[in-house]
Image (cartoon, rainbow, N blue to C red; front, side, top):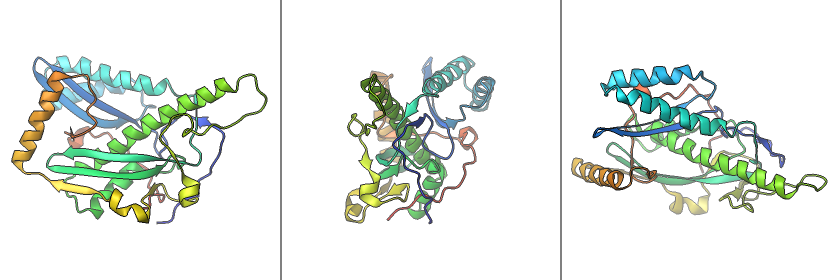
Length: 274
């Protein structure tokens, strides 16, 4: 694929997801009276807040959940949207940087482990398109895997973007009272980033270096029913002991297609694997 030229700049940009579509990753994990509901999807922060209540009611109706879930689902979504919106309008650094993305998740009977580098400066990158290509290349047929992979990427990019806001804030404070502007790379401010230009030149959003093929080779395993049952039991125990802990590994995605609110994204030509 032909990669669009990235415009590298040392000046900060206003906060947004470093992807073609500015979507918020939303994760729900709610338990009421022994009944648990889990879901993960993306949300357009520009949508009116009234859509949240509509979505919560429709979800409870479609899944035949107790009415008490409506308030909890709506509240959780609103809190995560509020966190995202709290960063809007603030400066963040993205130029000349790529970040490591790691996949370690289970979707139904499919176990996936992979890692690659993502260009934080390419605002035309498309996690959903990458996920579709990923599944097609690896022969993954489960339709729920692609959305789960895209969500995992967006969730990590959101975390990196918020860290970039903190880096910009720290730089601004440290330079207060001085004339001019000096860019402080996120790597020097504590972020786990790499210099894209030095490694690969001005191209590609997703990169695997040839010499690191073996290190970054994706692993896809198909689990038996017994293995899935064992993992689900372990996940349930972990949740019972620590329900507030964010489970980043061995995550079980239950994503009915009805509830995957991933908007149609502009196809990006900037996703290249070597």
